[in-house]
Amino acid sequence: MSFNDNVRIDPSRVNDRRGRGRGAAVGGGVGGGLLLILSLIFGPGVVDQLGLTDGTTTTQEQIGESAITDCVSGAEANERLDCRIVATAESLDSFWLPYLDRFGVTYTPPEVELFTGRTNTGCGAATSAVGPFYCPVDEQTYYDTAFFDELVTRFGASSGPLAQEYVVAHEFGHHIQKLIGTLDAAQQDPRGPESGGVRVELQADCFAGMWAANATSVPDPDSGEPFLRPFTTTDLQDALSAAASVGDDRIQEAATGQVNPEGWTHGSSAQRQAWFTEGFEMGDIRSCDTFAAENLDAP
Image (cartoon, rainbow, N blue to C red; front, side, top):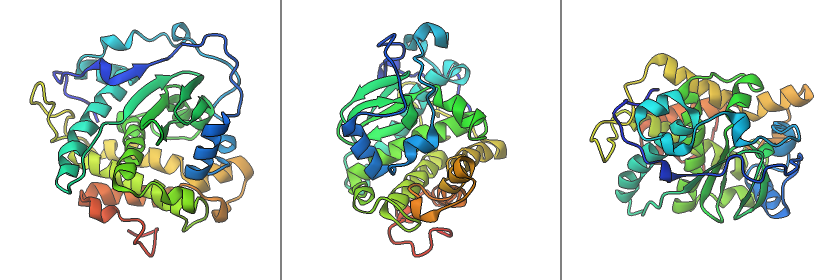
């Protein structure tokens, strides 16, 4: 799904901390505060399952990207991943603010940070091993841009733009859950095929689908032009590919050769695809009530 070239985007929407803390060692663990929250929200095995860091630090020069301040239009968003994250965040803001207002919920935009290797968060110190995540303490989403390469090379997802935009929309979905009061279910019941943790993740997938359904009609406030061009069947397949690639069953089988639903924290590949599709086809937050669903396989 490509952005319209003339859409104006604001690079200040994103806090770019890539390349800072040069020379700091990056291991496979995370700080105690973040470990606690991530283990409750995402499951204690997520770091080991993902294994996204090899113990090295990446600097801004190694990435070879231009400054985030160059991200000023849809044209740059179509060319560069960091600019695409900026544009996706603004598109999500423009969708969720008026949508939630219809239900009497005030939308406060989550902060967005790009980092490499490691960063400090309101939840504690984090490394790239955890992948993209949302910290409910500081209401901020975090993305190590190297993850998006891992999504393709390690997890087998499509490299298409909507696959990347889906990841951003999913993390914003966790912020929406905090605003409407469903995020805490992951802490109360973090693991298992019918757990609150799985229902939280599938709801965030459904919210991502809702955004995708509306993304081609939500206008950029500055230009009045829709953020995104009409998408194709291939675009939708890209998003479904990303959703499937991070399903618990696929990650477990790749890591251990077997599937254990009792250890699930995010749901199966099929479930993640199904709930993204539900949000996309229905476009209604009430259809994303995973907590009322008796069968998570069939919304």
